[in-house]
Length: 260
Length: 363
Image 1: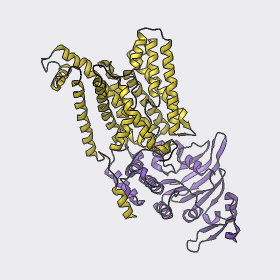
Image 2 (image 1 turned 120 degrees about the vertical axis):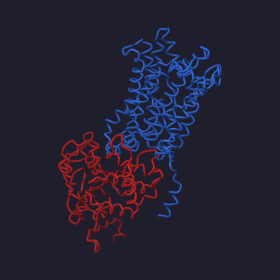
Image 3 (image 1 turned 180 degrees about the vertical axis):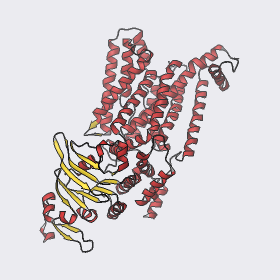
Image 4 (image 1 turned 90 degrees about the horizontal axis):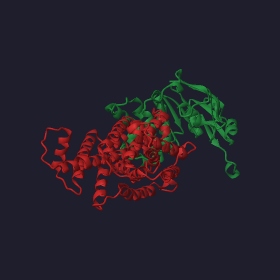
């Protein structure tokens, strides 16, 4: 599935949060959205997964206008891993993941053996099968995040949106979750905080600053010291990593005894 | 990791009736318990009655000719005209309040919601009182219920709007908004009564406002029964969406729920249920708060299980509370709202202390 975002703008109370952003994700590619806090990454993603309706512009999945789909049709095409950990109700991990099957179920349909198999498989993929009967509320932040990834997997969509999917995760699961999603071969767009992870996993990067697109391209061309200085206001050194070949970023602290 | 996982998952408890078979058995058991409760509740009273007599009279009234009456007329009168309607009304109101409570809690994503606490019952009361005092009858026999429904809708809408802050509902604001709206509607109701000419209307308003099931008649049962059946059926069918909504608004949207439309439907439905229940029983507090919470501990949060169980268990609960209200200071009767409040208020405080962080404290 391919995504085409064309001149999308969104504003709230007169303040432009997303300014005429255009981007595209090729089928099967893993696209990263980077930029400082408040640069409009989450808002742009919300426009894509239909929580914020853009004021202008168009968003298309395989030439279908996303905002013309019904909520159910959209949920069968777009799987989302949110930062939201909300809810005070005591669902089990299995029940949370089973919710991912909802857009595929008719009104009176019961959960089938197939649904249960898909849920188990999704839980196994994020290494949470042993936790299936546990209460979601008792999990740690990282465990919750993996369960939410499993729910998006159970949704079996050909397009995934991830909003800071590695927040709360320790390093092992940061890598595992991104490896897992990349390995699916599903078109993915992800807002990422960690530039080194973005450099490692993304085919394309789009850089947002104050709601506008300031750079785009493969990580090696986008992640330059000049861009990092301009967008984040931090000095950095970038060199291709000898093993991965991907740009590796070292941020330079201001205190001289460390930087020398 | 896997060792830690096994030890940690070992403490997991599977909710009651998690398997389809177990759930069927649970519903069957509750239905049997409900029938037993109805029988006992009809038997208990100043004039004690035998269980077989209760059902022989009922059968005789439902299918005349099957049994030749060998009982006194006054016995039939007590059983069929006084106790049965009252017990059945108690069941309907209890089941209905539990279903409404569970649904409201999912809608506002907060276990502290209840039609009474959120001022929805006060809204319904205002509508009903206005109809009685002004003798409005635009909708014939349904005027009272329809006015109560409109009042409930108005109050619930007001609370929902007031409790929003930056697109989020917080527990503190929700409860404060509920209290505020509840006071405004109660004040308006009192104003209406104060200004009314003394007469039969004021008497009937006051009798009605005291709440309770004392005035139950067969013709009170139809509308709440219909609303409860239709409402519970609709909600159970939509339970997947309700589950998603109770986890989060955005989550629901990404799982294919048309959130704004679904929310409107749930608003209308809970207001309708509250309105029809308040119209026949006055405001009975805390049933909608306590029952869903206790039942969630028992069967889990999945609304496909929770709602049918709430309807049955709520009915059983209120039938017994009403029995208590009848016998505790016999031959006098206690208003049923006193007992539910005495049970519910401490429960509410316990719940509030438990979910401290949601109210701004720390868990």
